[in-house]
Image 1 (cartoon, rainbow, N blue to C red):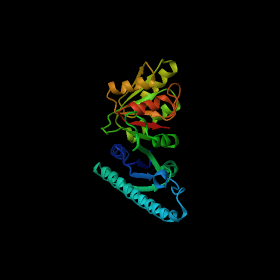
Image 2: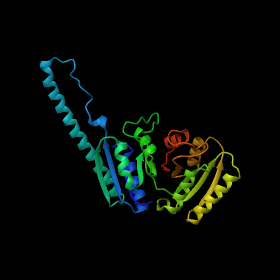
Image 3: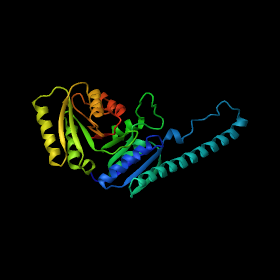
Image 4: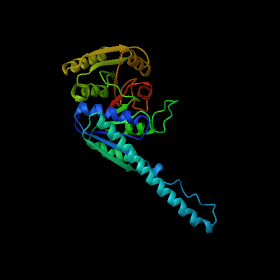
Amino acid sequence: MDGKIISLVDGSTYSQSVCEHAAWAARQLDASVEIMHVIGRREASDTGDRSGAIALGARTALLEKLSSLDAERARLLHEQGRAILEDAARILSENGVTQIEQHLFRGDLVDLFAEREKKAALVVVGKRGEAADFASLHLGSNLERIVRTSEKPVLVASRAFKPVGKVLIAWDGGATSRKAVELAANSPLLSGLDVDIVYVGRTNGDIEESLSLAVEQLSAAGHDASSHVIDGQPEKALGTYVKDNSVDLVVMGAYGHSRIRSLIIGSTTTEMIRSCLVPVLLVR
């Protein structure tokens, strides 16, 4: 996993946690961190021509005032963005990161991100954004857009950071769950951590063999690894396992197989991200 870490911040409650998770990943990978803040088009643009019903004589003066207000709004958004980046850089520095880049953009987040992530090893984003509804546990819209489009592993930060010692890999026998095991076995990101590989549902010979091979691969890489088969609906059973077994990080394939089938469009991953109090690492 070569390259820098991209940390997406928006000034929300999750921004500090995003930076602390990015700092942890940077220490594990010995990587630099690029902080991105994007002023969206809706924030930066005017809401339209608000002078349509005004008489011609007054319209010019009104438009001049509106234009002045728009310019002031743009200036304040820029200052706010710079302050968000400076706060993020401070948190990263306090957590031991020495190589930090700050980038403030205007435009569409996904369009800008697609270009920036080409040189990244990992993307860190908050579970919810500035406008998220905490009462209903809605996921941030930008999170969904990033996860749908990113070609790199995405670490979805929980609301508060805590040291990572134990990892759960959600296993379904598909290609992306095997990639999750490969990441754990080969990347310094998860080096030395205990790993539980958990399959939800009825097993068969193929699943049992694949679990055994996964444990062997992780054990050979120096992990204390074990496999577990549990009953229930994946989104609920995995969440319960996380709570009952002191799991600090969930690793899931970005695209799955069987009942853990789709990314954020499907129920399992969405529910895991929404309900788990631990970060979720999504791999492709």
